[in-house]
Image 1 (cartoon, rainbow, N blue to C red):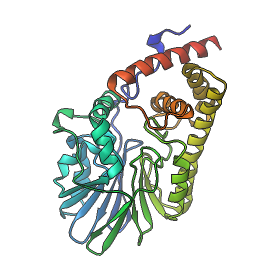
Image 2 (spheres, rainbow, N blue to C red; image 1 turned 180 degrees about the vertical axis):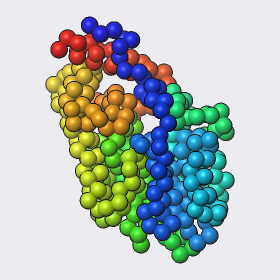
Image 3 (cartoon, helix red, strand yellow; image 1 turned 90 degrees about the horizontal axis):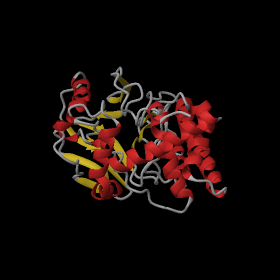
Image 4 (cartoon, helix red, strand yellow; image 1 turned 45 degrees about the vertical axis):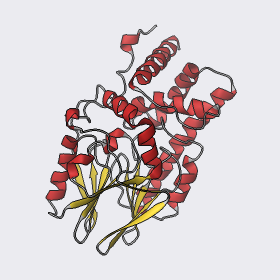
Length: 330
């Protein structure tokens, strides 16, 4: 039998190694900011201003992105767009001095409902990403929202912001550059990184991915992972995200149909997916949250329950302890 102390460290608390940052130009004035599986951001430089998609976790973390931007332009950063509400994406927004912080109405509603709990939860999960968390002035509040779509005109450059369906959260949006055929997907698509589904709508997500495919993106910045610079890599990332979601959810639904408890379903699903996806970034981090949400949805709990720092730890301790016991017995 394996004792609790041998279980994996909670979430990403043991992930303390700094990542190499890459700032890749995908088209003239369009950049992907990536860091070896950490949350990505996108940058669009217009005629007289700059738009940033996803703000990073703290103002200190955001400064690295600002430094990259200042290496290529001195135009003001007027718009910060939030792909969704998770703290690791939004709490650095104050660093940019933007005129507008834009999100879907669904994201705004989620910040109202659970933003404070999510912030505390994610700081506990990702200590490295929340460097100098004391510099965060408070929750990030969008100053402009929309229901389904809006268009930004950065001079002649057009950026379409679209809510194409529920997936990673109920408020996810993409940014689409029609002239360049470049998409910023947020966490609707990952590349070589495990999708986090703790706040997801797993039944809807495949339909949303199908809608995303219809854009015919030539290049894509995923939520995590390298920027995708060919249509073939874009398709590969969408396919990989879809495959993980389908295989994980189907395994959990089968466990629920067999009337198994969550702990057993988690251990079996982890074992089933680890061979194919175990090397993906944050696999061990995501799986307890992913399976817990899938278990709820498979039982008819439509909307994700709120994660708190306390709920995180209780869930992790129970699932990881029992998983280690089952693996030891096997």
